[in-house]
Structures are given as structure tokens and as C-alpha cells.
Image (cartoon, rainbow over all chains, first blue to last red; front, side):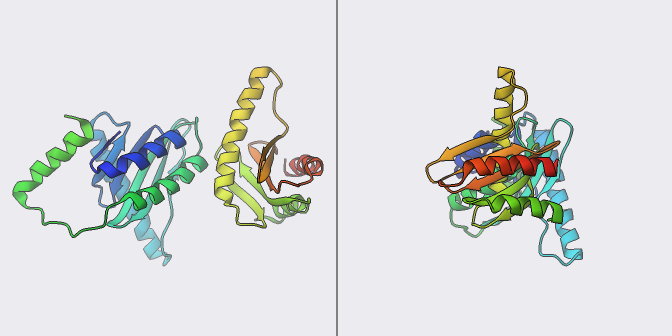
Length: 153
Length: 116
């Protein structure tokens, strides 16, 4: 498991242990990766984060069109692996958990522990502070630092 | 909740000491129907009971005793009894410590036949 924010590690570790999920990606609603477990290639993470954030954005827009406050989790059950996309509120905005799990667990268990993960993360999160402006010259350095943290290279 | 399932689960909650009854999708661990008289969290009970039932079924299969008909978990503050009900379904009852367990076992078997 690799996390950009160290306080994410303990709640995510607990979730992995209890849910038996195979792959987890935590991201902001804009697709910025916060932590990952189970991915081996950075390109896979970028694609999964972009697609996951896109799906949640789509369902949020559908909810708006239907005039309902929000839609919940998105579950795609496959014959072997299944995918859960779960948006949840954090002090600094909405985060999304993308969880890939197999037949050794169930969607009910994964959803249950995902709900607890959201609570644990919100409790562990530091007080929200105003974000510093990101300058163009810093952007690539910050991106590379995040990739090194997530993939150890 | 459909009327048929509602009647079955209401029958279980009428057994003395039963706090809530659930019909659960055994593979998914999701609640299909519930009849609850307390603040028991149905989604959590369904997910964990289905997981427990799946593991127990594997353990029973290793002994060669085929499919389990029910299981009863006793805790200090209450208990949980569950029985498979037809293809891919699980009936779960959450009980007080002094629940009439014998009557509940019979009620669960009857309910399982009606659901299945």
C-alpha cells in the first residue's frame, strides 16, 4: 500500500485486512490519487482514477437531473472480479474509493467496511487548511513527488 | 418489502426474544427484506452473517456433512441464528439472550420452506 498522506495508511490498512479487497484506489472527486494498493503500474492508476472520477461525476449529474440529493455507491459485479465505487465526504471535499474485489468476499462486506473506512478517514484527517496556490514551475515537481510516493520510484 | 417476505419475517419476529429478522442475498451479503424492532444495523448484520454462513458452509463441506441447515451463534448479550432459504438466500434472526431458541429453529425452518 502506498499513500501520499501518511494519516490515510492506518484506516486503509484496516479496510484491506477486513474487507479482503484486492485493489483499492483512494482519490479526490477530481481524480487526484491519494493512496493505492494493488496497482503495479502508474499508468493503470492514472487511468483508473480518471475513469472512476468520471463515473462518479456522471452519477452526480444524473442525480442533479433527477432532482435527488445524491446517488450512492456504484457496483459493477462481474463473474470473477467486481468493482465498487464509493463517494464519501471528507473535511476537504468529496473523496472516492475504487475497490476491486473477488469471490472471497462479498459486495455487502466491502460496502460495510467502506462505510467504516470513510468514518475512520474523516476522523483521522487533519484540520482542513487553505490550499496554497500551485505555480506552474512547482507542478511537475509535485506530480513527480506524488508518483514516487505511490510507486516507490 | 414484498408482502410475502414481510409475512415470513413478521412470523420470525413474533417468536419470543427475536429482535429482528432479515432475508439476505447469501452471495452478496445484502439485505433483501427486514423486519426489525430495534436499532440493529441491518446492512452490517446481513454482510457479516452471510460471510459467516459462507465460511461455515465450507467448514461443513470438509466434514462431508453436505449443506448446513442452520447455525446458532451465542453471545453474552444475545445471539444470532441463520438458515439457508432456497437458492442463494439466507434467513437471519437476531435474538435476546433469553430467546426461545427451539421455537426459533422451527420457525426458521418453516420460513425457509416458505421463502424457498
